[in-house]
Image (cartoon, rainbow, N blue to C red; front, side, top):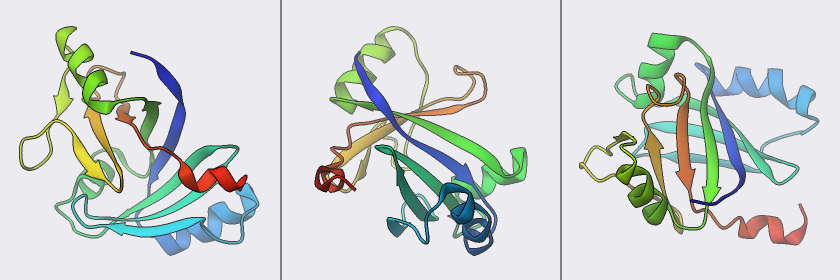
Length: 146
């Protein structure tokens, strides 16, 4: 499996607005480059482009969502390190052959849809309690040299 780059790093936060006020002066951004809600994952996200890598602040939108559960168990902080790959499905197949444990989506699938790509989560017990994500996101929005 070839890793192209670090795709993004995600920080789980209780209050997105408060986190933005703390982080934006530090990262030198007046606002997020991409602000969205991901209903299936039960999160609101503020994404910033930093040198071709995404930096995300994620707030849970429901107490039973994965980010809410992560915060309850681990507190706020870095939750996800995401690696960009050419094909999430191919990377999953390769790693499953090596016995790598994945976290299934609520419907039982290993890969999950996001915009025009797919992603999958490797269980943190395999990766030193870091939730590792594989994603084949194309980063078309950065082709304008943002």
